[in-house]
Image (cartoon, rainbow, N blue to C red; front, side, top):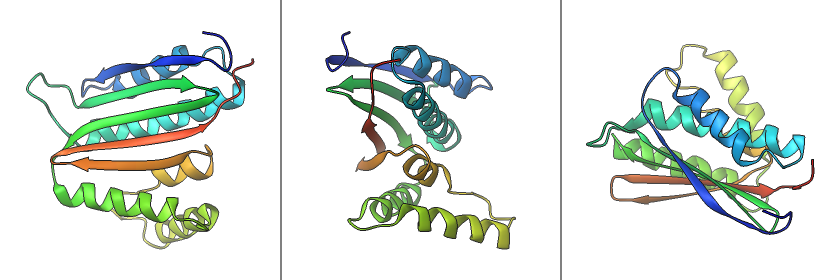
Length: 165
């Protein structure tokens, strides 16, 4: 692929096992190996966060995979897509609400991130940190969106990516 060109999305099926998130990270590193270090680091962060969510919270399919992670680049924009079946519709609704808050015009992601950290320090026994999507937006610079179709949740993260090393 040439910088500024287009790369078809490559996908990885995640099997719920101890190495799944590491497998996803290596997959992503390979997919964006020609990009700048900053872009590679951001992609690694996003793929690890999304991969962990898919493995932890995704419903298992008939073939035992938890979901997929896709990575593609088009016109200097990196797109990461995580798709999985949900075990609880309420979980998908909560994810959609958080992404909506993060993506609102004028939303200060830094404040959302800091407020969530304060909540976690105040109540460290919360069952879920719910910090991964905020990290992707704040630390990784990703724009997030999601779609819920029946029992399927799809989260997309996009950001500019300099394709030069």
